[in-house]
Length: 493
Image (cartoon, rainbow, N blue to C red; front, top):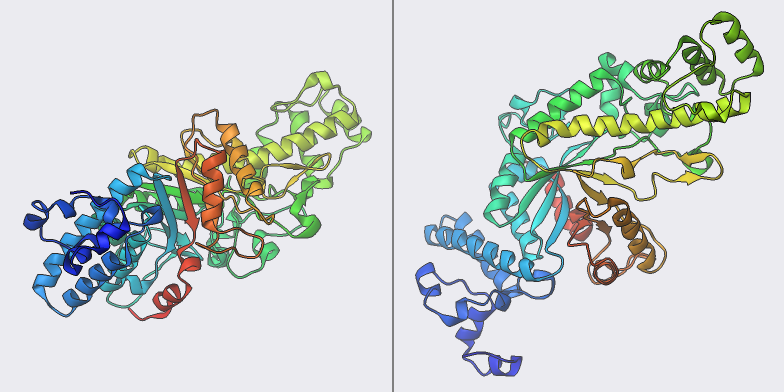
């Protein structure tokens, strides 16, 4: 018997219609009944579970909380059923992977809170979550297993062994969800900059500013990616995350801070965040002779060089010839203008290389364990501005390893979907087909947000115009469920 349309369904007795809409069957009965087989009967668009299916699951969860052992068994069974339904639906529905970005709070350590959260995410058709594991100077590691200088998210007395990430991974997989960790990277958080032993790790520009004072919002602090202490601190953190064996890990804030107005463009060497001791030492090592090192130092100090500098260097290092450094084009000549232009190029490249190297280092504990790693970035953050300026974030994502997943934040706003599609297409064009691209989209289901189209409209435009895309993510759960997010944030463990 096949139901061809809604009118035929309505002719069935109510108890059969309820079963088709999502009433849970026991395993033995389900295997015998024709109406238990089609997963489509319990899903709507974008693989959302029907209201009846979601309501039935929630009723069982609530009953199980009150001690009903039969309801507890049925609840566990429905989790398996919905995981299978989700898997089948996503396998035949674009996008095959639909993820959402989620922040966990201490209250999520209560099993009933975590269960309700993950159930709701599955009900919405998501089959992957990106769990934030490092933000605002806090890490999602248990207090008793936290080798980092950052506080644990859960700090309540008696909860020192609570492992929110491990719990999310286990409960997520039970529901058919892939669970990725998601972390701030070069943004170490405001409190890190208050540690006396970490002052030398803070990024500094040539204006005498640290990133702590430059951003000055009480939450951000960018580090010098060449600093060994910062590298060690972050490496230990990633090792702690890798030990929990997530399905992947995404690195966010792989960049320098961005100023506002004219400060959003780096057009002179003093604008670059390369004046920390470690960064300057690494830049000195890019010189290929003494006169090259001397000229680099003069350029950093004053922001320009003069003919007098070149004369002085010839006298000081008569045996060396022209100043030289990595990447210098000797064919461009030895004029002041040519050398100053190349020193600027060297300085920008040095700043960008610090970002690339820090990301590569951060990903090692994952790649060595066979865990996928990915980079989160702005598609426009690697662009030149004007004749010789650059976006001050200096996020060279087009030079990130193609073995990483690329997660472009396609957040452009232009009143329609085209600018969003253009950002995604630009990233795809850079991959040469070698890299998995999973755009992150911002917005709301079913409604626009000012000049930002709905998630539905954005996804449909990407599906039509960039057919190679098979996975997307949505930022963020807190946007879609603000009341639920607030209640979890402020409830007591």
